[in-house]
Length: 385
Image (cartoon, rainbow, N blue to C red; front, side, top):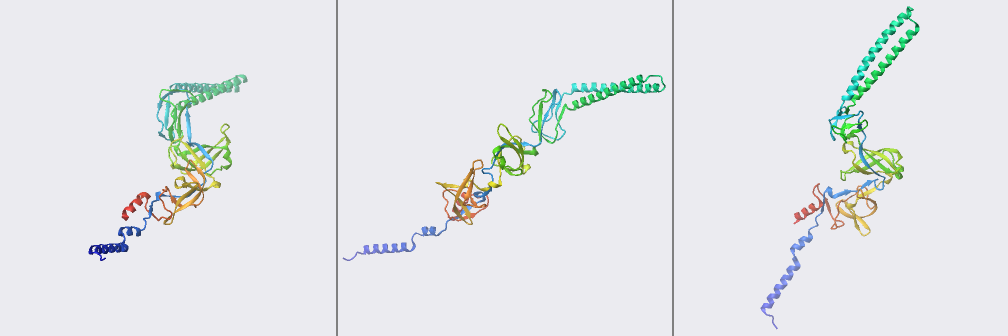
């Protein structure tokens, strides 16, 4: 049977179409397959270095930030408060007036004491003149030796009374000066306990003055860890109210006795940089004494991923991203760090917050600060279209 012209035409068109497909395929798909994957762009804030620390498992110190120079000013005389010149938080210079007490009664005592000094002075001068006359008469044989001795006794008694009167006047004068409570050194007024009109007795606490430039960490540590402590050891601690800011210092003093109730030993750590120390006393602080024998590689837990019992991190090696298995050690709950027992070395760079979509061996490229990985990848994807 002979083929019709229509069938011949359809067959020819089908052959041409298949030939075209076998030669070119889909142009868009081929172009996409040929294009290499865009590198993962990483900014400095996307990365974290493996560090070293001696804090995990080290002795823990708890305490507060306190000034080394502080003075509790108390009333030295009983009087009424007339003036409060400085309030809490105000700075003072050495000698500045802080509180003035009523000096009326004390000034009256001073006036009486000064009058007693003048009277004793006159009495002493009179007995001196009498003694001089008695000596002259005794030399002339006109009075007995007993009369001369009596004159000397009266002169000595008047001299003693004059000395006592002068001492009472000095005491009264000091009492007057004590009605003015002044700053003993440059600092800040803290914990004012009285107000104008209050009647204070001797020994009552009036106000505290502290030196903010002398702040230090005063804390307690378990006596069980005393054998690990040495003066000069580094101390890392955090202070309530300052978030995750870590302060550094050195162990300056270890108390010679433990508290009989808590069995803790008091220690003092000085700030490495006093300029960065808080200017407020009494803030709670907690830290650890860094021991050289306990130093280990540490990494923030956010950089570690887990898969069952296995743990791994994403390490940046040159221009590639590597999935590296690690063995974990002790964990520091307070700092959020974990010991890296094996798998990494000091200074290795890893991803700070890895995601589940990462590929081992993927290309990476460093970018300037501020261009985070997510935004950089999105920009790269948009540029490649």
